[in-house]
Amino acid sequence: MNDSLRAETIWIQGHGGDQVEAYLAQPLDGGLHGGVVVIHHMPGYDEGTKEITRKFAAHGYVAICPNLYSREAPGASPDDAAAAARALGGVPDQRLVGDVAGASAHLASLAACNGKVATIGYCSGGRQSFLAACSLPLQAAVVCYGAFIVADPPPGGPLRVSSLAPLAPELGCPLLGLFGADDQHPSPAETAQLEKLLTAEGKTFDFHTYEGAGHAFFSTDRVSYRPEAAADGWSRIFDFFARYLGD
Image (cartoon, rainbow, N blue to C red):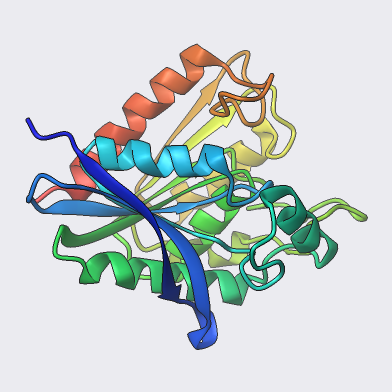
């Protein structure tokens, strides 16, 4: 088996025709692969997110992570770029959809991509993965502890966005949600509310909540990391993508 891959920084056309930095990783086995748009968390376009992007390529997917903070802080460190984005209330929803659309189009244009594309996002990126799935033609979407999907952020917080609950009827693809029972954003009550909403709309979804895990349990470099939950979560993600992104 040829498990080699190539990872590189590229530029893609994002919302409004803007040039957006992105990190692309793809297998080099000559085959056709599903595409994954990785939506980074609020700490930004960092090494952890790039590692996740490479992980998808190592598992047989063409993966891309657009730098959602390219405009706020071009060339800045992830910490500085995230601070600049927070000061502005986060990434505007319309711009996010445009940037993910550009990333998805770039994947679909690659010779190694079979034309099927999904999104996955973590934390604020989880919310944005849901937003993209309600706004763009995708084959699948994954939400990893995505906050403020059915609730508005608390006043004074870094995000100035609103609930996406009104968009639930527009969800156009199967959704996988992975959550922590000890998380507060989203809380188990918010996850249950989203589950009830999607059930009422007749949507295809699969939610799993891990006991003993809180926010960011996938993050290997943080004290929140929970190996058992993360390992099970990764297994579910790869099974989900195999079902919906395969030939």
